Image (cartoon, rainbow, N blue to C red; front, side, top):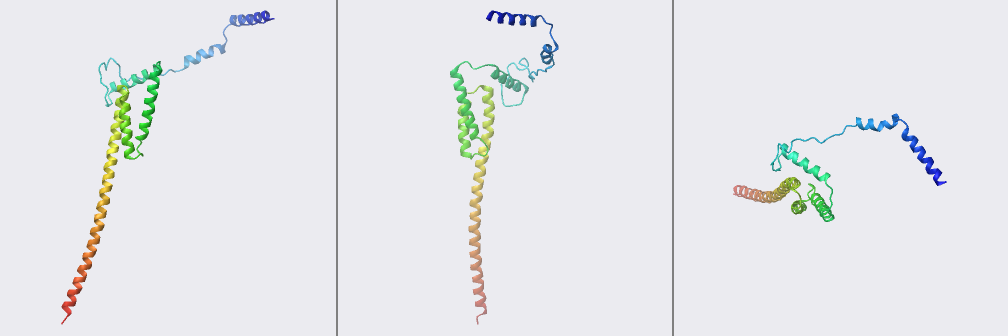
Length: 191
């Protein structure tokens, strides 16, 4: 019974293999041929930027180095479990420090985020570290501006209190002046 089933399946497969290819069999080929494959656009080549140092400018060599780094990042699988663990820890620390750098966070929380991010950046490769150093610079400027704003607000509050004190003193002085003027008039009217 088993031999008969296997023999019939073999005959059917042999018959299918000897049939000419139909239109449905060629559809996937034509579909693949009509598919557009998008290649990444190279802004500069390694030949034109052989020894370019990566910095925070927008030169074409820097853009090419970033693209090369990202391609290498996605094309190379992580084989070492220890490396994978370290990278996931760095990624988690990076995420936590960036959350602390959110503009809506208070200045002291952002300062802590800056310190944490500075520690994490030391474990990153040069192009990515440079990018995060740029983020840190902007965050530091924001924290400095927040501190200046806070200081100016405190100065304004102090000056408003001084102004209120001066107004109170002026009011007291005016009352005393009015009292003295009234006494002078009474003395001037006296016989």
